[in-house]
Every structure is written in structure tokens, then in C-alpha cells.
Length: 107
Image (cartoon, rainbow, N blue to C red):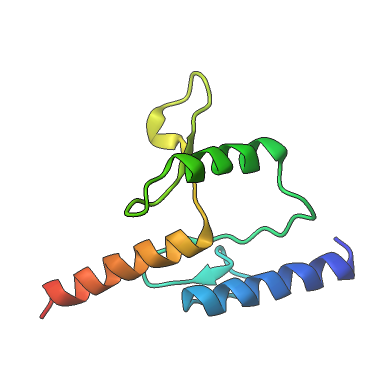
């Protein structure tokens, strides 16, 4: 991996850590430590066209009170292993709701 790639990856990790209120790990299993998520960050020059197309469809079909997401299934695989794709903004909102709910339950 080139130095430029490492710098871009590090900068992306730092940006996501700030947004998600997570801590960057150094040489550990996960890129970012978070109270309820194990976050692996990947920086790509360009995302695969199909993924952005599918996400665009989910956003266009989504009503204001819902969170758009894409579930990707590989033929022959168990559905419990399907991948879920969503915008970081929506993940941040969802995690915030979950954590606020957990805090209220423990009071």
C-alpha cells in the first residue's frame, strides 16, 4: 500500500471517527472503536456504480419518516449474512436513537 493510500485511509478513518464519536484503533482488529459498532472504514476513489444506483433507488422510494437502506443478498448464501448498506448520516441517526433508548432504559 502506498503512503498516499495510507494517508487517505487514515484521514477517512479520522473523519468517520469524529462523526460517529468513535476512537481510532492502531494495529487492532477494527478500524474504529465504538460502544455498539465494530467499524471497518474503506476509502475508495469511486464506489461501485451498482451500489450507488441501488442506494439512489432506496432514497427515492423512502418516505421522510423512514431510513433508506439496501440489503444485498448473494445467491445460495444464508440471509443472515446479507449486507446492509445505508448512508452514514442515517446510521449516525439510528445509532443515536438506539443509544438514547438504552440510556433511558437503564435509568
